[in-house]
Image (tube, rainbow, N blue to C red; front, side):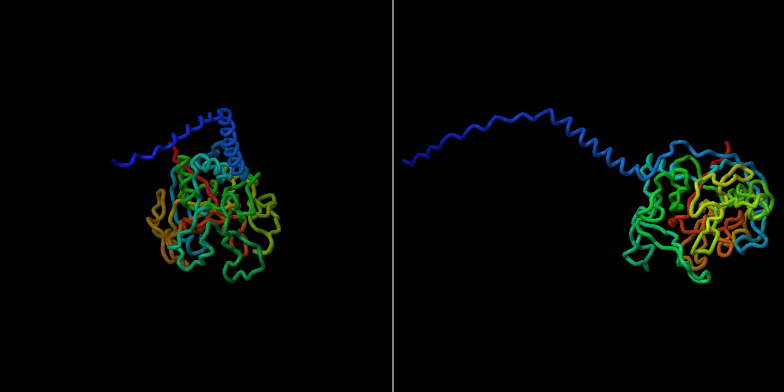
Length: 350
């Protein structure tokens, strides 16, 4: 007969299950909610949201002479253009208004993203981090390269001069460090669009025919005071602030033009919808021109097409960059941003 299996002691009974203390649930919930609100508070403390829509001005349609006889080659030939009526933001889009867009959509601007290394094959890998161009005052030769610009890691619309800077308390300042792609995204969200170059110049002139400035013939206006936020002093070393501001100014700091538009001259560059081509004026249609189908390659050594920007900025100096006049053209790649570049929007009149 085989051996009997040894008898084993019965397994001990498991301890009674411990009841979960239900009182801890609201504590956990409140703690989690507090953390979320704290995180949101830290983020929103960087800026103030303006939930009111930007005021708009109706710009009447009309015909004008676009360009400047004595201007640079890309402002010639002066040619007649007819523009249909449209509405335009009375001011540049402000920090508070752009913050509302970001709050509503979660949009991340170009300068907050990691640059695409394929687009910048010669770039130092140390600089392939989110950031943007920032103006740095210094003594420099105006005939040489623009060494007063630096790529600053951490510079973006929330921190225009770099991570230590802030837009807190500046909700009525123009939103800057805005790339064309960012401006276009905002415009679409707002049910608007970026102005064509022709619309922008027609609006900037404010009903004045072929005047050198948005306000008329005199650089400092009829009363001898500056009518725009530009650069006075020794560029790029020191801005004297003779116009009342060193750096950006809040919107509406200067009188509006004849159409009720503020800061069409100086303060911050403004993106237009057009691709840039220095020879476009020679082939531009008369009625509602929208710019070339694509941007010119190789302009001043640039390796990618550019979008037009208009209006100049607080860095415009008569001895170096007199581009705060209504005829002046400028351009930059659509993924480029800087602490003197913003935008305003338009929409068609229904």
